[in-house]
Length: 257
Ligand code: APR
Image (cartoon, rainbow, N blue to C red; front, side):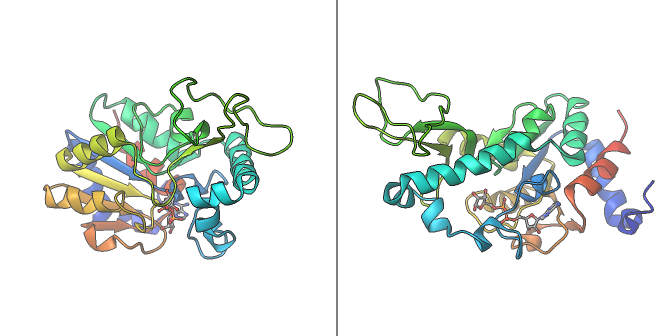
């Protein structure tokens, strides 16, 4: 069963399995790599990453949205369609099933704006960077709550008929603060876990990238799952070189109930 992941027989795997089995509290930090095998492009992978084809300043910032609302709105509309077409992969399902066997002991903190963890049945996901399937007003509007996305037929973002306020994607853009409650909850989970599993992130964006170091300094065992080196590998006690959909089912399923 493990022969297609030769590394799975190394001591690092066995040690990680044992620690995950025995840990009273586990924090799992996920990034775009978690959804890569569901067909959702990452941001920084050299050839396929979104930022190799698009300018983040133009497409993932309030300034970029104000400069060209239709361009940004349509780019997110395309990404939303990609998320809706995607399915959770074996990694999402393995993590959700393993978490369900440990009620109250596993906290998933994600940088991802898709809903694949949730659709795999993962409960209590802490979203650090928002939700691409949600929308909110560009200007805070006490009169009207954020509404579901009603795709404007002309491709421009929906506009409030009364005041002209624009709807914008419900994600955190560069230069914006993370949702306060989410960051506090994620920090609490990192400071209080016994094992932190970091899956599919380059560790390029703070404050999310700082959570692994926080966990380590608080005494947690930090293990990274990533087919490639990341900017936070030095924070890890162990690195399991492999993809989310191949590593997680093998790492977690063997643990048993
Ligand atoms: N399984 C696991 N990891 C993978 C896989 C896979 N199948 N494929 C790629 N990876 C790894 C890459 O090696 C890389 O380290 O996933 C990571 C993806 O890195 P990024 O594209 O930088 O994504 P992420 O770390 O989530 O970016 C953080 O940056 O642009 C912002 O808001 C955006 O939330 C995002 C944040």
